[in-house]
Image (cartoon, rainbow, N blue to C red):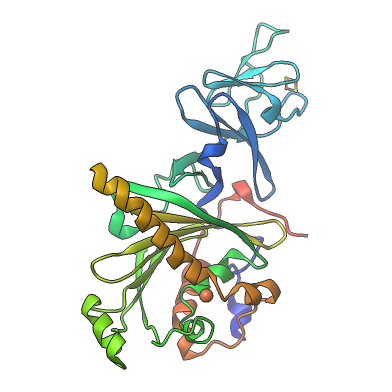
Length: 336
Ligand code: FES
Ligand SMILES: [Fe+2]
């Protein structure tokens, strides 16, 4: 069987692996105001209650279908703009002005959301799964500072954007890297897989021999792919690692909407206030470097992985990992 025919889930818009997907920027969800959001075919209403927590429900009122983003946030509850039915923070209908008894009224389907790195994220798997929002493994549990980088759209499926970061052939051709990276694969869990470069810094010239002093083991480049379509990168010399998260989500028409996140350790006091903005800006430049060069390829590609070669090993490993991912029925998409 041809390799491309064995692939069932990878790059398929109809398959949405359970995961955390970014919805909107946190700053767009103000206390006391409802806004609309969308994930694939699911229309959502988001609002921030007086307790500062963001909640997400199906967008349309089960009475007659008014869009609840035109409604009113009251404390941590939401009132429909049409006939003023009121829903509590779990989505239960708790008040109907024209009727005493609300006990038999349908509620709103609520969605599991979380905030991290300045974004609101939607969990599409089983709501009881205790899965954490994607992290950079090296920074797990450490207080962080982060800023939002570029927002972008790519004319291909998120999987195609993701494998770009482990596509060692193209690092040399498109990005003119003078080293051939070799990726070691480490599954971190059923849903999370890590690729780390094990190639040492070469010593071809004086500059590289100097640079090697800052890369004691290998040229540091570590990419961690989480459930869903998010990747986190660690890159840089031994004494200063840069951290970038690429949060991607699929669209109904087979494209990718992405948001880059720049992350660093929180540093306290005046030192932190001075140094961290500089570091985050430097991280942004690193991120831009990665993003540059592929744009023209992504604008016209008709992705079909037909002829894998040995140098595609990391990509093949990722495809295999992705083929094992699960998808709950909640956010299923019918592609025309
Ligand atoms: S449509 Fe919402 S209360 Fe009637
Ligand atoms: Fe690239």
